[in-house]
Amino acid sequence: MIEEDLLRTIPERTEITEDAKAFIGQLAQFQELMMMYNCAIREVRTKLEVLNDELAVRSPHNPIEMIKSRVKKPVSIAGKLKRRGYEMSVDSIRRNLNDVAGIRVICAFIDDIYKIAGMLSSQDDITVIQVKDYIRHPKANGYRSYHMIVEIPVFFSDEKVPMRVEVQIRTIAMDFWASLEHQMKYKQDIEGAEEIVERLAQIAGQINRTDMEMQEIRDRIQGK
Ligand code: 0O2
View 1: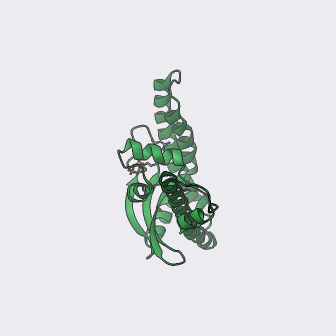
View 2: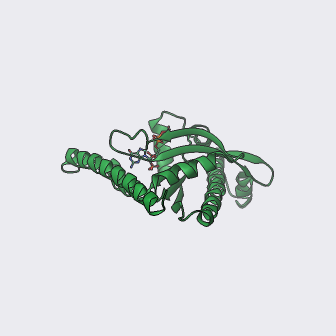
View 3: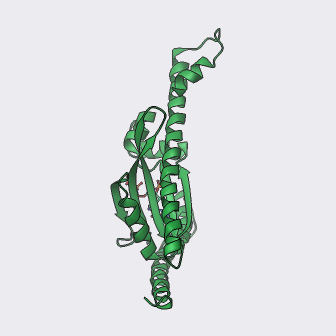
């Protein structure tokens, strides 16, 4: 246990209160949990890279343009627990949050998104916990993306732990839009915010039409 290892590193004669011990314990548990989420990301990322390598050999183009990943920042974890009214503890993170480990897959075309999602879901060590298809059912603000919460077993030295990872799959254009729109979330007093929201919704529609047209042109080029 990381917790015991940490306590052993404190010199013997150092006064350590029960409170401090409990705090060190929580920090150690948090560190261990984040390490586990990082390992889960690596497992899912490898699966996606393998699919991409295989499909690149078998088809005329690479379905995946880019893969990004992140472990949610402590401040965002705490914010989400608080907003949802969950207990603020390391155990609560594990029990209540599905998106601490996140992978974003950027594809060139919409049909690649469904191809990758289908292939990942059908692997027998992957359990799909939840799917949110914001491409077929876009959000009112225009947000489009395909979200999956998957569970994958991760093998550690003495145990196999099922870990949850959020996988967001979207096109380059959807990603471009979402990155800019996401900034609205953190800016309170933007001048003309209503107009910006309206314009973003319109652009999301244009982006969708462009994505579909690009796919149609690709099909014609490839004689499909
Ligand atoms: P961040 O900072 O990106 O991590 P649930 O987990 O199902 O209880 P949640 O978290 O609302 O509920 O799930 P959902 O709808 O699948 O959204 C998860 C993530 O998708 C968000 O994480 C965003 O990254 C992205 N997302 C969802 N809706 C929007 C949107 O309208 N605009 C943009 N730009 N991104 C969106 P976080 O935790 O909100 O934020």
